[in-house]
Structure formats: C-alpha cells, structure tokens
Length: 428
Ligand SMILES: *Cc1c(COP(=O)(O)O)cnc(C)c1O
Picture 1 (cartoon, helix red, strand yellow):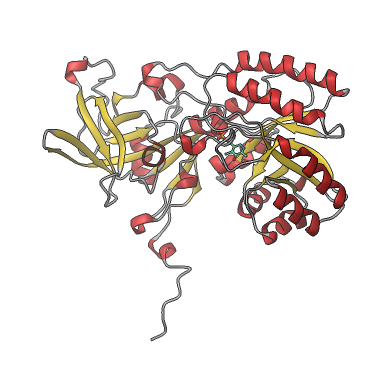
Picture 2: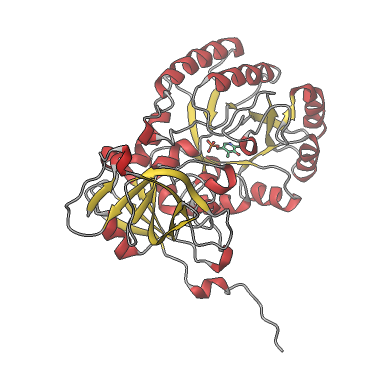
C-alpha cells in the first residue's frame, strides 16, 4: 500500500499490520473494520475511571449492536442498556443475562413493556403515564424511573436529551405523583436514571447534572442504584490534534462526588453510567472506494461508495469524521507530510441520488485518485446501526481485527435477495 494520508490510524496502529487496501479487496467495500484492542481499551478506561467500589458501566448498545462486538464488551465485565425489544433480543444472543440488561424505554407500547417484563429485564419508565401503565401490567414489580435533571448537553440539538426543551424523563417537580403511583401499584423503585445528551468533551455539565440527580435520589431512600447516563465524547478532529475527554480528571471529580453522596445517603449505593459512543466510536474505521473524480463549477468532488445509507451522521447531524486515503500498489509514496499548497480542497460524496449525500465538505487532502481506498475514522458509534437500504443499497459487511492481528468476518454483506425477503408480491 502507498500511505497517502494515514496519520491517525498509523499512530493507533489501527490495522495491526494489515493493509487496508488488501482488506478492501478481500472483503469489498463499504466495509466496517473494528479493532478489538481499541474496543477493550475504551471499556477499561471507563471501568477504571473511579475507585468507588460499587460502580457499573452499562454499554448503551444502540451505538453498535454487532454480536461479536457485544461479546467483547461482555467479556470486559460491562453490562448493557437496551432501547427496544430488538436490543434486548440481540443482547441476550450475545450472552448477556436478564440481570445484566437495563431497558430504558421511551413512549413504548404495553406489548413492548410486557416483553421486557417477561424477559426478566428491569424497565425504566419515562413518564407518569408510562409508570401508570407499568403498574397496571406488573403490580408489585421492581421498576426504575428516568428523571430529567433540567440540564442538557450535546453536540447537536437532536441529541440533547435533558433540559427544559426535550421529550425525555420526568420533571423532578412530579416526585409526589411518582410516589403516589409507586404506592398505588406497590411498585418498588430500585433505581433512577438520567441521560443528559450525547458527546460532551468536558465533564462540567455532566458533574452539574449529577447534583440535581442526587437531590432527587435523596427523596427515595431505598434505591439500589443511581444511573448517571452516558454522553462521554470522543475527539472527532484527531488529525487537527483535538484533545480527548480527560477521563482521569473527570473520574477524580466523579469519585469525590460518589463517596460524598454515599455518605449523605447512608450507604454505598450502586452507581452506573451508560456510555455508547465512548465505548464504540474509535474502535471502527469505515472503508470505501473512490469511483469517480470531477470538478463541477470549480468545486472538486470525490465520488465513492460511502453514501448516507452506510454512514448517516454527516448528513443527519452535520458531523465531522476524519478521512484517510490509502492507495493500492507498491509502498512508495508517503504523502502524510505534504505541504498545504500541494493538497486539494475536495468534497467527498456518496452514491445516493440526493445532493445532500455529502460525507465530508471542503477537506484539504493530498490529491485523490480513482481506485483509492478511503478510511472514515471513528465510525464505530451510530455507524452501522443507523445504516439503511435506501436506494436499495446493500448494508455493508463488518470485520474484526483481533488482538493478534488476525481478521475475522463478523457480519456478512447483504445480498440482493435480502432486499425482497420480507416482501409479499401480489399474486396476480
Ligand atoms: C443513547 C443513549 C445513551 C448513550 O449515549 P452516548 O452519547 O452514545 O454515550 C445513554 N443513555 C440513554 C438513555 C441513551 O438514549
């Protein structure tokens, strides 16, 4: 391979000695490539962030539900969140037991609640009306409640999930009504939770939101756990040197809070966090191939097979993903250190018939050629799980690079037949 622009993956040794252009050839593109070592590292960073003994990390699986991925997360001793019956089902397939799954649902039907109850999974309800429905379905049961601490955070309006403007959680002012419903149905409130939003890069709003959650917790002296939510960010602008969230600093601040609260509460209650992105994002690079290059009205477009059916984040949230360039062939060129003036400003676009199908806008990259392989960084969170069959395109394959550098296929590429397998044509 010619290393055209490979700084970030080189620094992480992401491919563990494998040649991404060979992987692309063998498994075809688009291809999600997961690195086991990095996934395990992220799990451990969070597990070890505090010294407080009764601390559980629940991986929030909606970020990445690949089975092999979930098996690795489980082997690291994490538990999981589920947002739907489908996630509960997949998590059980990966080996998680009922007790290791926490169903945090939002506006679900009675049938969906019933499914979780039957599966023996603890349910967190998100409104007084859902608490009422839960009580009718399962009087005398254990239940959790999601509160809205009135503080939100996030990288985009669509992912701020607490605060005064969002649909999530029960307002702390409703605590008397919560208590009344718990009593009415003899429910035991075992936990309370919150999730303020996604992708914070400093711990301030997280720490601040915990204070409000702790005040709520004090009104329920019999809790088994307090779940502080997810949202831990990762640096998407690595090639520009963006610093990671300082987990050890956040951990220290958090640790103090946890011990102090346990003292006020009178016992070492269990604390949980629910990170999705932090665990999964950096573990995956998405590979695609360049099929055409053109200049339209002075703007250069690099056309590839990475449409928003494969990775929707740039289109849905205006998200930035770093892009690398690998060229098949003899190892000769290394253009990582090209001068700015030898680079080109390009738009990288996909193959979906919409002009909004832009993966990366106005990127300064070494000149890209047809046939080059692109590597989209930090694609492991909300990548495959948000992919679709739009334009009747097939969802991609996934491979895993094991810690010893060997490569295994963990998801087959879809086939044309998959597009119609659930369809029922008219008989005449
Ligand atoms: C999505 C979600 C998470 C995880 O968010 P990240 O930003 O990926 O860490 C945690 N908790 C709940 C309730 C969620 O909906």
